Length: 142
Image (cartoon, rainbow, N blue to C red; front, side, top):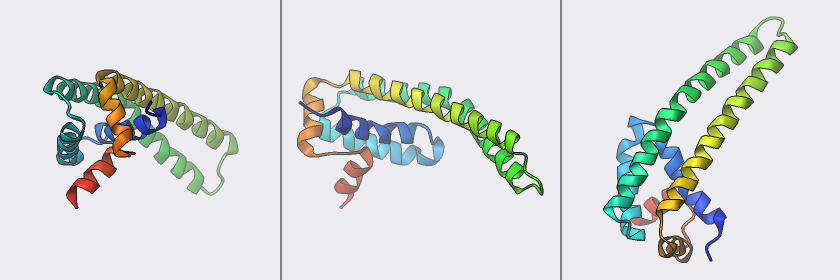
């Protein structure tokens, strides 16, 4: 039986790539091709994963934008001549809430992608000793 941790690590790369837009589109496509070959993903599974990633990006983008704004505001507040501890504390709490929402989205993506894989594919991940999609890509580029 494959450990949930290994599957989680593999899917974290999908999540990472899903959340970083066009700049990583080529790497995402490359990684998907490698994963397809190594696990024997069907075209339907690849399409399903791509759809899940697209939905994830759409859901995560507003949260990521809000987090960037909060980060900048916190930086500004910390650099002021007399930082207000209550304001800084509130900003930190708001940042944490956004991170938690992003984490929940990431966990949902991970669960949804796992649901697309067959038991044999999950087992293959364990047999190959693959920890992450990034590791698969690096091993295959050498």
